[in-house]
Length: 403
Ligand SMILES: Nc1nc2c(c(=O)[nH]1)N[C@H]1C(S)=C(S)[C@@H](COP(=O)(O)OP(=O)(O)OC[C@H]3O[C@@H](n4cnc5c(N)ncnc54)[C@H](O)[C@@H]3O)O[C@H]1N2
Ligand code: MOO
Image 1 (cartoon, protein in one colour):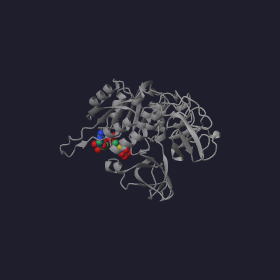
Image 2 (cartoon, rainbow, N blue to C red; image 1 turned 120 degrees about the vertical axis):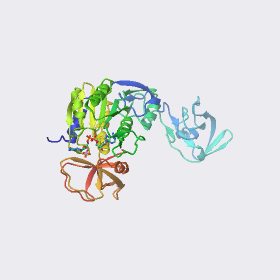
Image 3 (cartoon, rainbow, N blue to C red; image 1 turned 90 degrees about the vertical axis):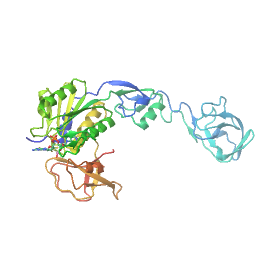
């Protein structure tokens, strides 16, 4: 059977998908959430012309020439504006963040003045607007601050707060359940030294990726290689209102690989099963009503790569965010062999290149069980199906892990 191309599989996984409902959260709780609607400013920033420096507010067109001796008629401090008007021959002592008084259009920094009782002498020229932040220069009331689908981060939260927004409309967090299958599996710390044991690693990486993408994740535990146990774990997860059920292991073709038949037996129609991908060929995807099921291979590197390529995009899309992952251009730092018919995502490391871009070298060992190599890698080097051999300096594309 021909393997499904990676892009077809992703399109299938993201097909017929409406973002989850919107909910309102306090701005202090909104880090990492995705906006369900565009945010408009509820005030202008600043509301009125504001000083950017400590000094003296004056009318630039009424300065008599330098040095100019002016009468200080009052003070404007942040939160304590001067109520009067600045006229010819006058100045107002002003501080950073204070409103520029009526009549003044510029602020002379105090380093360019000398103070003598109620008078101040300006010793440097100034021009209209100098050291003044005009009303609305950052943003205006009613103006667009952030678009729907934007993932809130430190910078956008500061912007929303400055726009006087205390509560933000965000998409509900996708709820994800993770099952790991295999008779050989034990939890970290539980390995007894028995040769056949394998310590589970997948759930920790998958959960970290999903949580970073805004999901709520439940680790539903380990399932033995037994049809009844597998079906009952799937049935239990399906009954608990999750948006996504992720399985790891049991995806391949051996007698102990029970996930596909168990999912089918539980009424989950598989629209993806085996794709032209390395690592991750046995990936499967199916749906039953609103439950989406992603069956990942058990090999840890395969599970991680499949999560990056399919699970995280699904989590993003359910929140109305761009699915990703984004590719970046780079240049090969080492030769690569011709590729076969599967798209290859090679574990690789980048270094800055002479032209200001990135040079990328794949690790010599690409086994899909090697977590040490995955941990040292900082990106995946993409090799298209049937790509010819590549030489150092050739253009290529990568998926950075910390994009
Ligand atoms: N005859 C064939 N054999 C295999 C094929 C194939 O096409 N024909 N595909 C290979 C490929 S590609 C992959 S990838 C693996 C994936 O198989 P499974 O999804 O069935 O994975 P398992 O057999 O359950 O486990 C593989 C490996 O990973 C370890 N494992 C499993 N779960 C975890 C976990 N949660 N944390 C850490 N490690 C885990 C497991 O102990 C095995 O060592 O199949 C190839 N075979
Ligand atoms: O494609 Mo498997 O995913 O070799 O490890």
